[in-house]
Image (cartoon, rainbow, N blue to C red; front, side):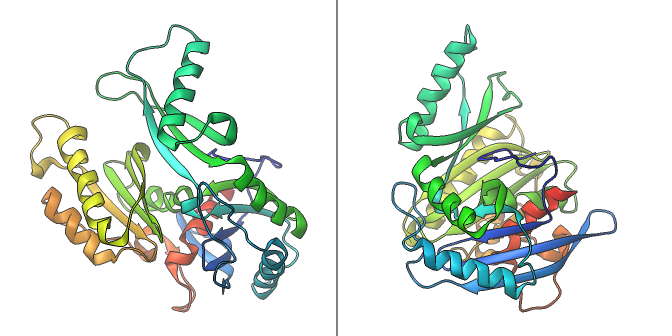
Length: 318
């Protein structure tokens, strides 16, 4: 179960969640449909004024907290969720960082382990650990037996900006996560999720986050900040690393285990990403949509890209 930035105020997660990005705010209330399926019970998406949220890791994100409070109240009311007080929240992707920290050798003590992880976190995120809120999750060892940890971080002052808005609304945000953590839930729900590798590409205005999963466990995590014209090259480099370094030595293209691809966000064209993946790995994949991941949308007016992250967090209610 995801843990980054957790504020566990209840032993059970709510079925309602909020998703924020630079230009949109989306609220979702899910209900369970049959075995492994979900349907939108209530939802609404609002367009935010330009510049109201300016997602970034190193700078102020919320330029007018009072205006954001008003707008979030309005979007929750429009979805019929005005009385909802317990929420999970998916934060803008550009406000966060994710990395997998690999230890070259086994630490001699718990103190040494903590020192090594703090040093690696600072190098990966480019900020002193005391300025960050970081959650680490121990992963399976790599093929060489080295310890690995998934680290997800945000600057403490940035997280406090968002938390102050939720407090002003009277909301209890029991789980606050980066956007990709909610979106990755749909890879676990998709057909074929029991085995094999899966790739999430979560794009935003300043770049993208790529998360490779093996049997639903994080294998590679990259937060890539780049210009739009450099996106293809960065994705290509990631896929080459996966092909040449992650797959077992001696495996040919026919043995590639990647069998699920989810592309979310406006920065990448889904078919274009599929073309890059298929050409690089010599496979035949098509990006998953809401039907394939088990989410029934009530109308074409709802944009899966906008609600994928909060809806994914809402699945934690079950």
